[in-house]
Amino acid sequence: MLENLSVALNSGKYKPTMHEFRMFFKGETRVTLVKDSSIPLYGFSFVPFVEILNETKDDRRLVDVLGVVTGKGNLIEFKKEGKPCNYVVIELENIEGGLKLRCTLWEDYAFMFLKHLEDHPSESYVVVLQFAKMKNFKGSVGVSNTTYNSKLFINANIPEIEDFQMRLKSFDSQQGIQFSQLSDHASLTLEEEFLERGVYKSIADLKENSVFVTIGTVKDIESEYNWCYRACKKCSLGLKLDGSMFYCKKCVTHYSTFVTRYSIQLRVVDETDSASFILFDKEASNFLKIPAYELRTSYIAKGGDKNRHPEEIDSFKDKKFLFKVQVKIQDMESIVPYVISISRLCFEDNIIASFEKKYQIEEVALIQDNSELLSQFTESSDLLKDNLSVSCDNGVDTPSPLLPTGKTASNMDSSVIKVLDVDLAEYCGNASFDTPSKCKGEMHSKQTIVRVAVHGDEQSAKKLRKVIKEEKN
Image 1 (spheres, rainbow, N blue to C red):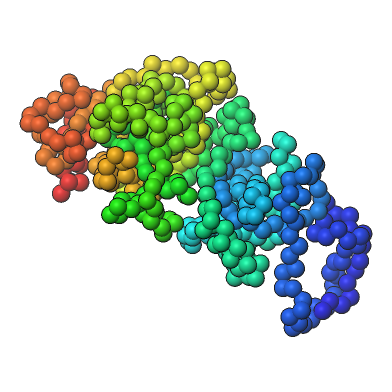
Image 2 (spheres, rainbow, N blue to C red):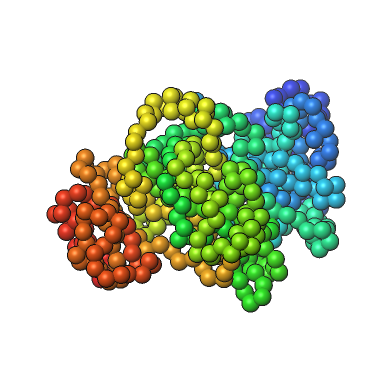
C-alpha cells in the first residue's frame, strides 16, 4: 500500500503505461507490505509481436515481450565518445505465430544473458523482457532494454514462463526450434564496420579480451587442423561421435544427423607479427561461394585425401583482407594462450585502400619466414573450449598443437629472424640454421616437430635449445 504520493502528467521520455498521469515518490511517501494473492506479482502486459513489427516509427511506450530465443549474436564492444559500450543481439520467436523479433540487450543485461547461457546449458531459453523500448533501426522494428527500468527473466520459475515452456514442448516435438548464430553485422555496411566503428590493432597488439579490426595477408592454410566439422543443427557446436549417434554437449542431446560447417585455420601476417585466425562457416562460405557440405561432398567424390583440404580453400592464400576479430585470452601460461576468431571478413580493394590510408599503413614486403612465426598460438574458440574439433570424415578428435611459448616478432631486436624446426620428442641436436625449414639428422614424425622463431646468431639458438630441453623435461 502506498501513501502520500505525488501525481504529475505522464510526459516523460518513455512511458511504462499509457495512463494520462504518473505517480512518484517523495520524502513523506509511506510503503506498506500487503499480502494479497489477487494482485499480480509482476504485472506483465505482453504486447503481441505483430503489433511491434507493424510500428512505423519509434514509440515512447515501454512494452513487455515474451518469447523463446532462436538466435544469438556475439558480444559487440565499441567506443562512443570515448566511453566503452557493449551489446548482444538475440532473436525471439512467439511460437504459434511464427513471428521473430530482434531484441538488443545492452551493458549489464547483455552480460547477464551471456552468463546465464554459460552457467545454465539448456535445450531452450524462454525470455521475458519487461519495460522494453521499441526502436526502428534501418526499417526494422525491434526492442531493447532501457538503462535502469527494464527487467530480464530467463527460464525463471514464474507462471508466464512456465506456461510458455509447456506450449513450447508441444510445438518443439512437432516442428522443432532452431537456435542459430546471428550475424553481428546484419545492419552495418563494410564501411561502417571497418572504417567508422572498428578499433584497429596490429596483429602484434591483439593481446587483450576484446573485439578489434585488423589487416593482414593470409600466408598459409594450417592443414594440420580439419577444415570442416560436424555441427549441431541447433547450436552449431561440434558434435562427438557416440556409437552410431552424434552427441551435443551443450544441448545434452543425441542426433542421427549433423550439419557440415567450415572451421578453417588461417596463418595471417602483417608487418608486426603473425597469428593463427579461425574462420567459421558464414564468412568462409561468403568468400568461397560454396557451402561446406557441398564442398565436402565434391571433395569426397573426387577421392580427396582426408588429411588435406580441398584446393578451393587455397584461394585464401596470399590475399590481403580486413578482419574483424574477437580475441579471447585463455591462460598466458598455457600452450595455447590466445584464441582469435574472425567474425567478419572484407576483401573489397577500395575499402582496404581506405583503411590503409586512414591508419597510415604502408605496403611492406613481408619475409616468407615471417609467415611461419609462431608468436601467438591460437585455435578455434568454440571447438577448443569443448576440446572438440572433429573432422567430418573421421571420428578422431584433432590433437592440440604441441607448441612452446616464446618471443613475438614485435619485441625482438632488429637482427634477422630465422625459423628452426624442433622435435620435442627426440631433440634434433645438429640442426642447421642455414636451412630454416629443415633439420639435419634422422626423420621425425610430423606430430612432434614444431616451428619456432629465433635470432640469426647461433648463441641465441643455443639458449633456445636449453629452454626447450628444460620444457621437455
